[in-house]
Figure (spheres, rainbow, N blue to C red):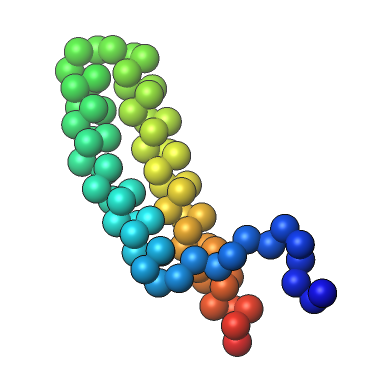
Length: 75
């Protein structure tokens, strides 16, 4: 039992591309929401768009980090 019991399965190339692609498609939506909130002066909507963009960025970085880590473990 050399593998950890709770270790996450490494995401394959297709899974990585799907995760990043779906995240990138949300970027224009977030940009539009951010712009609309600025025009209206709605601080809550502005904060919501900023937090959503931060969550999106963190998600993409986690996918890339797990993918990079999986590549190191296979070597």
